[in-house]
Length: 343
Image (cartoon, rainbow, N blue to C red; front, top):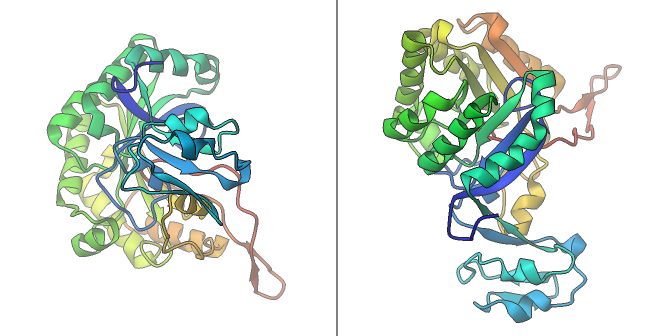
């Protein structure tokens, strides 16, 4: 492992992923994101620096973390260990001291060689399934130089690569990364500029321009080889047939045959505890999953929007429906957390 102030800042390495490109993949989630989506499934990925979280179910209240914190940012209260987020520097001293991993550091520095060595352990899965490495986030373009070096090193070792991006970045960042990506997973969350700004905190003009830019590179040079578009289906935000039809119309008009796949990613509420651990509230904490009928309705809107219907793929956990009386009852969500820029 590299020293704390060197290399790229990685939030998590997720193995055996089937959500971030073809085949079985190892997804590297890089820390830092310029968007603040209301539905963010990975709130711990937004800040571009290490953070600590307290996992109450693991805590034995030894209070070792409180005593060693150099910033005096931790206190023991009735509800458990409280973190003063303004004072905490994310140094990880408390996590190093904790005997049960109740204090957890989110954000680890890797050198390129360290990171490649780690993901290459899964080569057998890639070769048997047609999978590979996906650089995701957060937003990997925020660490463009490091991620480009990482993807190039993976390519040099014969590993297939994918870049998962929200598209909010400079063209210079894209130009650093795209030569080393076999596949681009590009998020289109909304095409309406006012709604996009309200829901994500940022405008979308540059995002859509970058999406067209990637498409043009693919059509002109064949590099990257493929583009997949991903759209999150969020109740009250994007999960409306008219919204999906509008996005599909934009894809058909601006990207056409340059898109190999359009993924509709159903809302997943398994991230509620993440917000609690970070001391944050979440507007969608009590929102139920989409029903199977709702998901299919949205998929039909996508297929009828002007794109090739064959490229539309809808996936994600849904509520179970009681067919006999027309009522719906909650279904236990699948245990796999859907990650990446899409959600």
